[in-house]
View 1 (cartoon, rainbow, N blue to C red):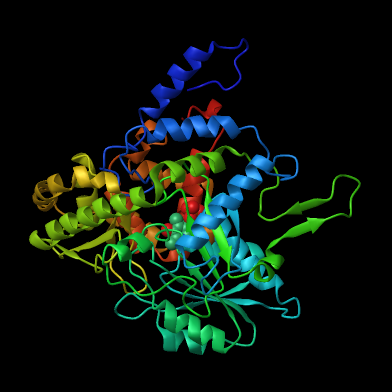
View 2 (cartoon, protein in one colour):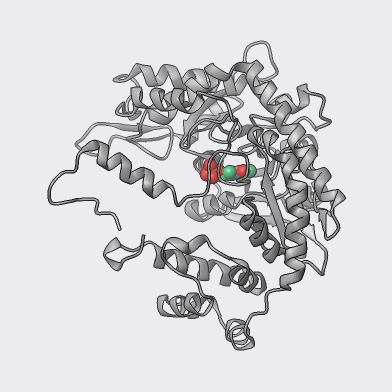
Length: 489
Ligand SMILES: *Cc1c(COP(=O)(O)O)cnc(C)c1O
């Protein structure tokens, strides 16, 4: 347990040593074996550069660009780079592109929905139309902003269905959105068709390129056969792209672009009706650090366009090796076409997917299990970044070994009493005590071993309906997030 406020201050060197010791329990952010959460280009010296740049601007406040013009200049440069990469800027079909730097993809999406909602003050019950594969952050945006969410099932190819989307658009629809690509499966929605039918109805259309916006343009330049998804597509009114994903910047930066500044206006919040300074914020945060922005700028400038092209090549090659390993190994199969930077696999009935994820983790491969949902089976997700180029060749043999071990271990057999109790649960019944009991019953510690074998937990969640999953995981998170005098963490 670490004490944040000791009675007497601790020397800096010791504090840093303690932090490093804490970090040792984390998943490895480098080394090309973690397939979610982190994006690693494996470029020597890049971390040090980003950290130094971060330090230069850490205490600068993005609240007021007139006080800190350095941040304004950096943000405008980032928006220009993102705009250019995504089909906008002088001499293009979207010469007036405007944008904002946000703290992440979720914030970008919330703001895209806010801008669309507030562009229609006359619509009392605004609605948002998304495919079922759209990122959960849209649901969060809809929830926060009291916009109704219309979820349209995707086709058998896991892509947004234009006809069904058209049918879902009504007079109260303020925004239609789709993904380039979807996070779960890494497939690109048919953006031109979707944007055209939104435009026909006079509705804004957002492309969620949070995940792929910084790599798809390079994959296309390398010859990948991917549909248009950017401002070259008529009807696309906004695009989000996370710099802390495939631009390889440290966490805390995304860009939200609009086709022009007029479309962006309703994104802003201004307030003069109090005795303090007039607040005018383009994004959700008011005070915000310049650190992530400077780090992102340094990362972009150092890697350069040619650097991103080279890294996209490494990533594409790694995807091919991993996908080839999945195809060549009995017991697993590709669940989605590996057309971008995701490898998504499913298991054959005799291989328990959640046990397999644990067996892969035991061999140092940290993947992301995705629960069964709406007719789709549970899958394992791998976000592939350039660093995987160095490790991809080792994956196949370990995958085969992990499958053998999974078969030997057999599927998770949850205690029938537990399954029965869980089957009778409703979200309303989930209390802190109940979650604590369930966690203990599943052998789940609340301390440092919290990321251990997860198959039992995942199997239980897998049979629960989404609302119960939400309640159970929220309850579990609440147990984890307690002041450390409880002895947790
Ligand atoms: C990561 C992601 C988001 C959310 O971004 P955060 O930076 O995690 O808030 C939204 N959409 C897609 C497609 C993503 O991959």
